[in-house]
Each structure stands twice: as structure tokens, then as C-alpha cells.
Image 1 (cartoon, rainbow over the protein chains, first blue to last red):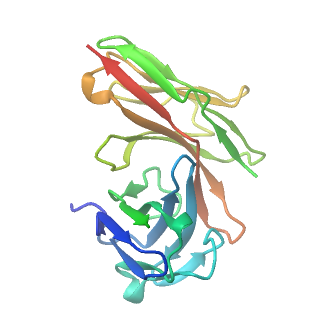
Image 2: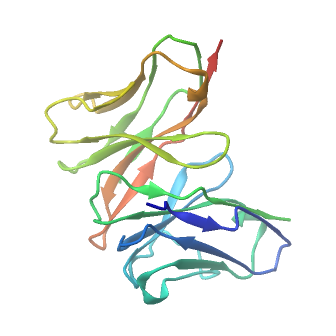
Length: 114
Length: 117
């Protein structure tokens, strides 16, 4: 089966610009998560979708971040306007059940804001 | 709040030797799950092994085993017969229950492992 795919793999934008990250979960996985790792810090939870609904978005840093999952398939994470501190690696993960023993991660999108 | 501690920022091991990567956790939840992930230089997060808090035996997956000591709240990863391809960042994580009834992973800072010939 195809794994979790993320696009783009890298993105370099200027402060104030907008960037949209995309995640395609494994087909049939209702649960989709976004995480990010800011340089030198832990990987942090951002939010969790169950199908098209936001189950938990308490990890979103501020209102410059907007996540959507239209139709319960792929998800997008938009950062608008981007700030320097948004630089990091953004991971998407999916699972069939919320308590699955394996959470399948994508390769991540490395975002650099200059 | 749960917390994962990985005290070894970096580790070296010689090829074919075994290595233990430390992980301690803190939680008041009696039901939890512990994960180890590998992140090579290419960036992807690769699931290695899982241990449930109620599992009676230590988890094993090929050359990976998890030394689960519940009373000490430790979940160390043991890699046997290290290979050059094992050089990577290793993350310990705990699944935590979020306030909105869902679950999410809480990660440690990671340990960078370098396997030398």
C-alpha cells in the first residue's frame, strides 16, 4: 500500500508569505495528524482530524495556521502569513484507529522562512 | 502532563555491537503506549517498536527490543548487532490522551546514533 505522502518536501518562503502544505494519508485511514519539529526542539503535536472533522486542534500555535481536510481524504496546512519561527519540519501521520499501535508518518515538509 | 526524557543527545556504537538508547517517561495515566521511531538523514519517520502499558512481555521486532521497566518508568530501546544503516536519530514517544478525547504522541528530544565501522 502507498504510505503517507507529503508535498512539497521542501519549501523556502519569505516572511509574510503564505505556504500550503499537503498530506495524503494512507487510503482508508480516518485519523490524520499534523506534527512539527522546530529546530532543536521536540516534535510537537499540532492537530488531529477524524475524517473531515477536527478532533483536537489544541496544538496549533496561533491563528496564522489553518488546517483543512475536505472530504476526509487529504489534508492541507496553511501558514499565513509565515513568520521566521515557523521554520521547521512538518510531519503528517495517519492511522486507521486512534489507538493504533503504529502511526504511519510521511517524510515531512521542511519549511524555511527567511 | 506527560513528559518523555531522552538523556543521550548522541551515542556512538561500533558495528555489530549492541546499543541501548534510554527513555524515561512520566505519566499518571494507567493506560499508555510507548513508541520508538527512527529518523534517518533522509527525514522520514520510521516506526520501530511499540509497547503497551499492560503488555506482559517486552516488545521485540527483529533486532529491536524494548526494555520496559514499568516501575522505573523506563522504556529503553536495545538495538542488537548494529549496522551502519542504523545511524540515525531515534525518538521515544508516548501516546497521551488529549483533553478532547483523542490521542496524540508526546515525543522526546531524540538521540543521535552513529554506528562506526
